[in-house]
Image (cartoon, rainbow, N blue to C red; front, side):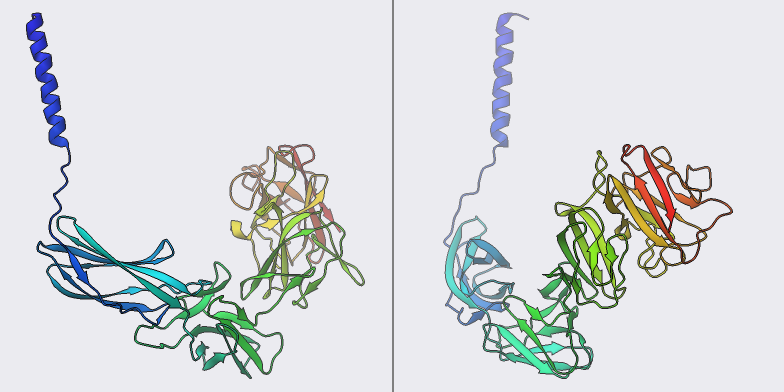
Length: 445
């Protein structure tokens, strides 16, 4: 091929690429028309939780596409609705005003956007003052009755006093509908967050410390409610998770006196609490712990923390060791069996010198004739002790290797032996020689 032909071929190739590139360019449609809206200010006396109606007259000399209404709290878009506008005329719709917790009264912005088929648009905005409705009453709803809650005189606060049938009063709360824009607002218990939430009717676990006549109070802005059962550990109020469980993350010092209020007849875990004649002291090493009070079981569960997270076994042997498996549970292995269920794992008490212990009583917190649990590095599946990293110095309990009657790492009772009913046994895992050279010691007390 001579040079002229090469140059001609290259020129033709470049031209073809240029034409192809041009043909792929997106050409925006030419905006045409003149969309207009006519809206009267219909937005007075608006409350949180309202369904706000509107009417808009729209017009254009080209086909219209959509009408969108957007509500803003400050710069945040909190609600939106879109209407298809096929032709000129009047359209009606509505937009929801969120209720929300701790939102102060203020002025919202309501924006209307009208768009025609050529993407030409018109906008119009309104300032909308929004306040929390001054309800004349709320309604406390129990399984058997309803009670009116009246304003206390404090902002957004309502109360009812009555000789309720029990100190425990599971109930939810609802509002009346105050005008044609309003709707019924429900307040119930959010178990995931451990507090009152809007939009659900799950019973709130109200509970009074004493029977007879008492008051139930609720604030429609802060969602603060009372009364609730109170559990206090070392002067600190524990947080309610649900009606049965209270929890507190707290720094505890080895040997310090423990005070506990709100739960009587509770079971003192000997791995964490030593009972004396007139006081109770903390057993494990000093550190941060998560204490959970379970009311039905009268049980204080204690779990080691690193910062705000559940502790895990560290490479240097510090942290925590957890128990998952069968035939063990506190305060009773029958009433609160651990099983192969990681959320129910038991935290062994870190007693110092990189040693961890769990104390059990035959026939009460552990089965006497068979055990089948193992030790883990965390409160979940993952790192665990097997027969290569854990040896037993006990003449009662052995470590499984997969061929001796137990899976690798699972504990078992040596054939021909049993634990003794009523006897106390302390299982200690010593990792002072390294986490891959752990030793299990079982002592009968």
